[in-house]
Length: 317
Image 1 (cartoon, helix red, strand yellow):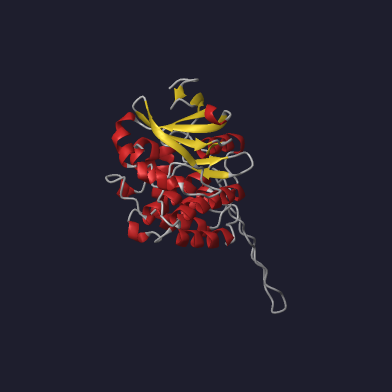
Image 2 (cartoon, helix red, strand yellow):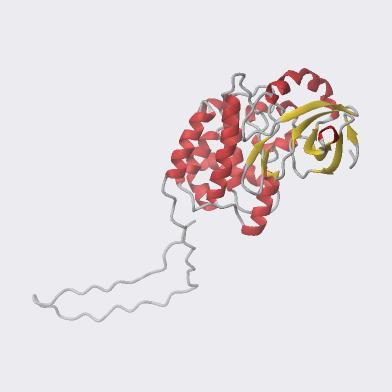
């Protein structure tokens, strides 16, 4: 795709969008509607037949109206690639937002994470509770859009079969690896838990995907508490325990639906956070011998005096 290319005879491409959706995102203008801003997402050419099969699913999503869901306004095929057109949105993907916040502050503060994630839950919950329920199937930081004022919009509903394992990575529930179409409420809970874990992670070093995979594995090994305290001591243990259950490998071990997950998470946010972990105390290389005081006679009237020795404390491991 190139800037100024025309799609469907009406959408003029302006510029590519960074880390946007499961496909290739472009900012564009609709010349049939006074050049209003739109966003086009191009899917891989090999999915053109699948797109025809899924056209009804996309029409169902187009009927979904919610403040936290970015409306689909059109769909089609251009140069052999399926595309979806969304209403315009001035903001960035959550993937880009998290990168910017970490570079500036090291981590995203808990209050911001809580607010943004609540809006994600609002959008997903509305889709699940619609008259014709819509499961997302490919939640990741690329499918969540954030405006400068904190507004959130979700994209990519029902596009799970179009998403590659490389794009979804650790956000796809283990049971969907072989069957991307077999989306359930339990797999939605997993994706939400992995998404929240990613939002809470501080700035990492090296491969971000492997860092999240390692973190999620640590949640399972430690039951959530130890690894969570290492990462974010400003949060209550209940937050990590909630995430540990949401991201269990076995679907039956998670919450049955997103409403139950949200209820548990709300209670976890309200719990008292852990105090900041103390820095390890440096042990001296050697210790001078301690001389015992000379004994003295004691009488019944003389109070007993004890000598207290303060030794270096054991650091947290």
